[in-house]
Length: 129
Image 1 (tube, one colour):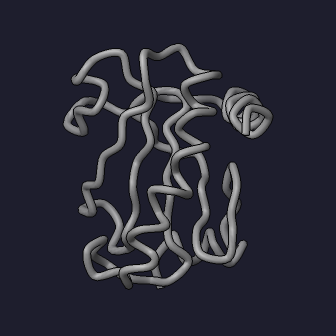
Image 2 (cartoon, one colour):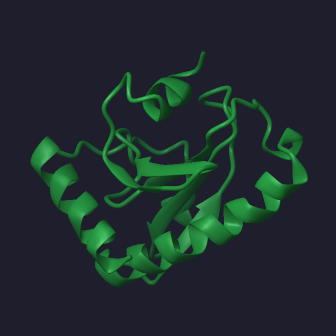
């Protein structure tokens, strides 16, 4: 079982943004920038392109209002999207507030964000949905 499956089941706490029957969105606790959100399917599949077609298609539609909420609440030009699939063996996508292409550079150091800041960011994004 992956760490994402444990978050989905509520066994590990997370800064939950929203969810439906197929997906969960929550703040990345090791973000590249403030407002970095992960979207994970509730089924445990390692590779994004091994997801059932309906999940693959619906994942972007699930992400769209979250991306718009990130753009409204975070200091960014737009919300970038990336799929790496290397960190956790559970399909997921990253929604990241960006001002330049370097903001999507996963080789840079992650930033430290306090619990209080995470709570505030979560509330800001949720309120903009």
